[in-house]
Length: 120
Image (cartoon, rainbow, N blue to C red; front, side):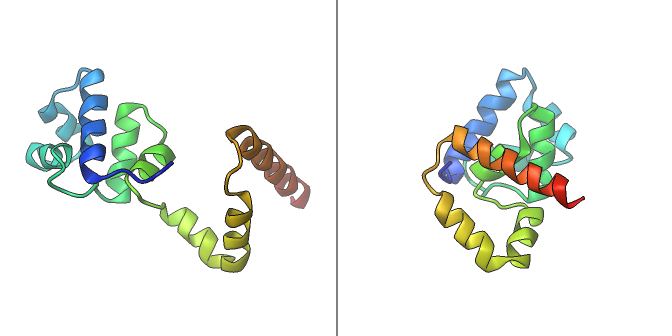
């Protein structure tokens, strides 16, 4: 997924919210933010919010938080920690896996899960 602009993120957020039939005020209440703040994100006036707020938005909209974080151009602290612990290997792995299909990614994930189970 390619990072989208703050306007595209705002457009996506407005569309996802309205498709759920949730008003701006109600949604702002659900995510613990002011309606003005949410409106400014939806209009593209503000950058996408913090990781914590994005996680809440994803939950309230029934979306995968990793997808919404990626759309916002954010990397979760958990992923950042994994990369920081093994920077060379993580970079090499990601460069090597660039261009794989979703099916190939799923096979890699399955293989990694098998490795983790063996180590326990």
